Image (cartoon, rainbow, N blue to C red; front, side, top):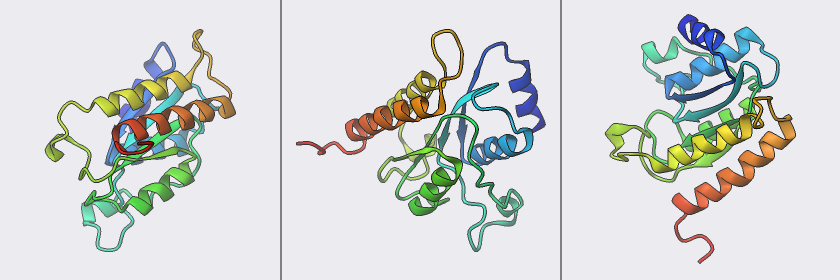
Length: 171
């Protein structure tokens, strides 16, 4: 977490984080420990396939990352999870999103969202990251008000989910 903090502190512009699996927990712990004001220096985060280190039977090396913080994050964020991820149940991923104040995107059944799951170039992930960037700050780099950022994420992430993960929605 020290390296994450150093990278954030050295950034010259608002920072948007993209984290995967245990990296999602590093972001959540960083937010708890630094207690940054809303939207600065981290202006947003895309949190993909968080690992559930608190589940019964979690491997010791995973359990050492717990307990998972459930404090709201001080920046707009999206949590994306798969229905058949072996490292976290979809309900638990949704619960983490609620605790973190994040908008939740159900990516359907895709396994643990990573290269090994066979998703290749993850166009949907790039689009979700673009949406987080759009909700993070105005064109002058100032953080958007929390309510405005959340509105952008909810509308845009829902559109993205329907386009990519619910192909028969609206037909």
